[in-house]
Image 1 (cartoon, helix red, strand yellow):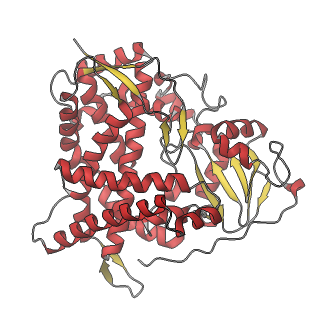
Image 2 (cartoon, rainbow, N blue to C red):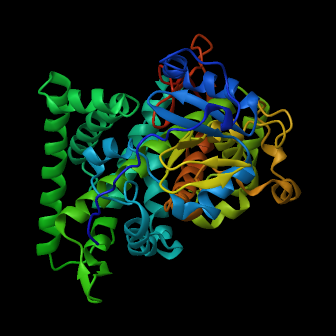
Image 3 (cartoon, rainbow, N blue to C red):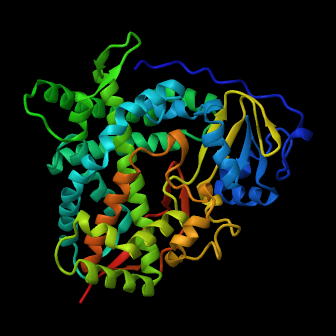
Length: 464
């Protein structure tokens, strides 16, 4: 499993009249300023021009894709003709050559290696630990307390991911890993949407912010490499994901089997850390918000917990019986998908929606736009968990709802994330009712994940 150098196609020169329709643009800068100022609002406006829309976000030629059939064509039909775009190079500053950043055959090989580690029989073993940590977090709250739910969910999922990945649960270990990763992640968020030449200049030179990032990344590397060395020398086999990666074998170019190098284990570990921490915390934060502003649904949610679980700790066996909880989480991810959009670059030309997509073009398929489309969802801006009947699911086009992506690049840990989120919702919901602070104005912050701007202040009310 060797890293492959990716050569990105140059920006295509195309006849503007042959492109799909799109919003009006300014000379030279196109729609770049509008996109940078309000990416969600601009994409929502652009989507009114059709199912396939041209957006001129310099220096890229960007196609907005907002129809389920076209999304399917990209991620399934033409998946061999598209790959990760130049922004992936920013993610490599932290994640290296890993499942998220790899393309083509390299990605397929990595996925085959890691997929068995997320088999149901393996992730089920983490259920009791997730519930235990959620209960400890729940018990530390006080009636009437005002908390930032975004921070609370981040702290809880951080403990869980550090335990499942590294087998560590001491507060000092959790804090130092979390602090190093948070600084590194915030740096990527600040750089990922900058023009490539500008961000490479800012990254290369010793500006204070880039120096802090490089020190944080170095601390993260030291921690992980020390854990790898300790685990390789230990005769005891642990059941955390780090140990499973060290035990995994991949087929090399000569047909033999080899273990992963320390660098390969490090890259995959950081990638799994990022995917298992940030996205689940964001999803839970939006779910608590939606429940808090829909008290009648929150009451039904609590009633289901009382009927199915009562006062005992929730277990994995309870999850199939929490039908309303499942619908609540499904609807929350529809309205506020933790990864709000993804993009691909065309490495080969192909046809999409009656238009020729040239090599080098970027395609963006925002879940936040497609999953709020009134063609697929009646009253799409309303929080209506009961819409998710078996009949509705059957009638829905496959890619009208895709919070975990799709095709060969569908999130490998979706089952892990779903189990974790339901256990946390059930455990915290047994004791607490959430009430959003009405003084806080809700606004989406469209970074790599869809965070709430300014956090999510809420009041805790102990259930009687």
